[in-house]
Picture 1 (cartoon, rainbow, N blue to C red):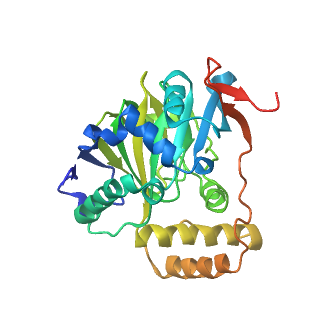
Picture 2 (picture 1 turned 45 degrees about the horizontal axis):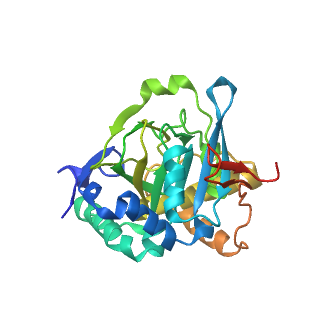
Picture 3 (picture 1 turned 120 degrees about the horizontal axis):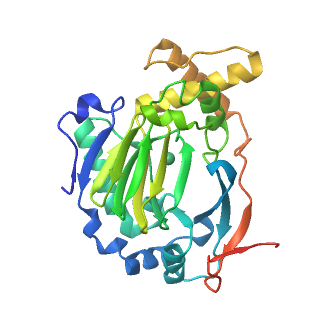
Amino acid sequence: MTVYWPDNAKDAFGHEILRADHQFEDSELFSDDGLAHLLDLYPRSALDIWTFESRHQGGTLAQKGRAPRMSGKDIVDAVKHGHIWLSLPCANHELEDLKPVADELYGSLETATGRRPMKREMNLLISSPNVEVGYHLDIPMVALFQVRGRKRLWLYPPEEEFAPAEHVEHLVHITREEDLPYQASFDEKARVFELAPGMGVTWPQLSPHRVRNAKCVNVSLSCEFMTTASLVNANAIYTNAFLRQNLNLSPKAQNGIGPAALGKAAFASLHKAMQPRDRGIAHTPITFELDPSIETCVKPLWA
Ligand SMILES: [Fe+2]
C-alpha cells in the first residue's frame, strides 16, 4: 500500500477535510520523460490546455488552446517555460499505464472510508510555475494528490455564503469551466494547505477552492468520484435548479439523504433520461495554439 489516510477517515469523510500521504512522487511515470510519453499516448483532441491572461483588479481571463502537432516532449517544455495549465481528463481510462495508479488511489480511499467511489475519473494535471486556478467548485467529490512541485490550496466551507445555491444549481446544468463569484474577505474562513509531493487532500462535496502554483512545474492527480450520498446530492441540486427555473420556487439545499433528497434525485434521473445529450452545455472556444517558437509558447489563433 502506498497511500495512507488518517485513522478517523471513516467518520470524518464527507464532512471534514482529510489529508493523505502517498508515494507516487517517486514514480518514473511522472518524470519529464514519463510525462512526455503519457502525452504522446493520450488522445490529443481530449487534452485540455489553458492559459491565463492577467486582468485589472487582480482577475484573470482563462483561454482555451490546442496543440495538434507538438510532441509530448515539446508540450512538457512549453509548460516549463510558459504560463499553461494542462489536464488529461479521465487519464485512468485513456492511459493503460495510469490504471494501476488510479486503482491504488481509489482503492485506498474505499478501504479508509468504507465508501465505494463510483464514476472514477482521474485527471492528470500538469501546470506551469506561478499558474493560478480561480475560485470554483466541482460537482463530484475530489481527492487531489500532489506528485511534483508545490502549490497553495485554499479551501472554503461549502455554505451559502461561499457558494450560493443558485450558482451551484447553475453549475450542475452547465460546465465546470465557470468560476464562482469570489471576495477577498472569504479568505478569513479558508483552510490553507501548502501541498508538496507526497501529500493528498479530499474535502466535502461542493467546497469552493482555488490554487496557486509556487515557482515550479506542478504535477497533480485530481481524482473525481461520486459516492451514493454525493450522487443523490448532485441529482437533488439538479432538481432544485429545475424547480427554481421552471416553477419559480425557492428550493432549499438538502442536508443528507432524506426522503426529499431521494425524491428529487429520482426526478433528476428521469428528467435527464428525457433530455438530448449535451443540452445546455456551453463549451469555451479554442483561441490559441501552443507554439514552441514563441517565448510564451502561446500563439493566438485568428490574430
Ligand atoms: Fe477543482
